[in-house]
Amino acid sequence: MTLETLSWSSARNMCIVKTLAKLGHYPTRTTEKEAWFLSPLRSETQASLSVSLNKNLWYDYGEGKGGNIIDLILALRNCSPYDALRYLDQNDSFSFCPEGFLNEEKHISIQVQRIKTIVHPGLQEYLNFRKIPLVVARKYCKEVWYRLKGKTFFSIGLKNNAGGWELRNKYYKSSTSPKSYTYYKRSSSTLLVTEGMFDFLSLNVLEGKLIEASDYLILNSLSFIREIKFLLAKYKKVLLYLDNDSAGRKATRELLFQFNNVSDRSDSYSNFTDLNEWLQHEKRKRC
Image 1 (cartoon, helix red, strand yellow):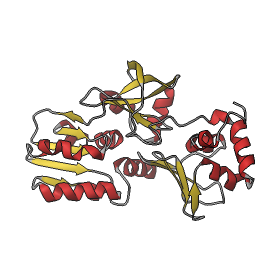
Image 2 (tube, rainbow, N blue to C red; image 1 turned 90 degrees about the vertical axis):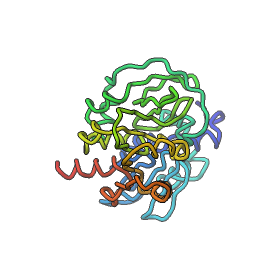
Image 3 (cartoon, rainbow, N blue to C red; image 1 turned 60 degrees about the vertical axis):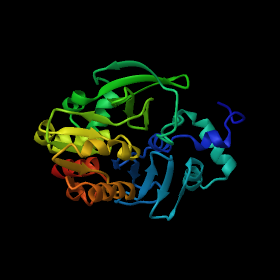
Image 4 (cartoon, rainbow, N blue to C red; image 1 turned 90 degrees about the horizontal axis):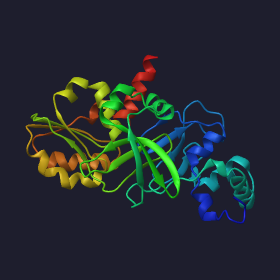
């Protein structure tokens, strides 16, 4: 790719997480929505630079500034915007974020090519980073290979009730059409509700016996809250494990108000964004 073909809009879509990795900076922790880094702008021991995995934007809480990938290169190299663009052009192996990384709800054309048992070392490494045992992931998920804009990608895939796939790997998240929630019924009187696949996998690690004795529902998106309400009324007990962000708390309050059989379990990880972040913390604390 030459500088003439690298537009400002294309440069802004370059993946911040991959760019930082190429520069030798890796996240200290990752959730479904963000990755946290020790700031490359100064020396520190507590990660204060956050990268939104949905928006592909960064913010350094220590510096009080953030922006897109061009803003990051400007801050790192103290150069002109033109030099930042040239630097990204010369390092285009940083790769671009596929659509869906920037907005998981946006419709994109993904052609699934292959579905198999999870064996790829890169996906196993990602599971290890998220503290999910391979045997747990293989029980519920698959390794999904697919084509997007002429390129081949692979991810950990969780099938939803409409036949689509929720796709996650180290660098981005996406989904195939049709998008829906994932619901498994084994005729239990208890329903477990999590927000994403890694929350559910984390609950398997933390509460394996509870999972085996309960029905479960993975929302895959909070936009399905209204669609699943008819299911909640059928259970004697519904346990919510939603994220501790504003959207997750709002959804939890709404369901607690409408249903007497619903209980909020987010107190157990109240100091963390979600179940997986708590699991990662607990596992690393024991090492």
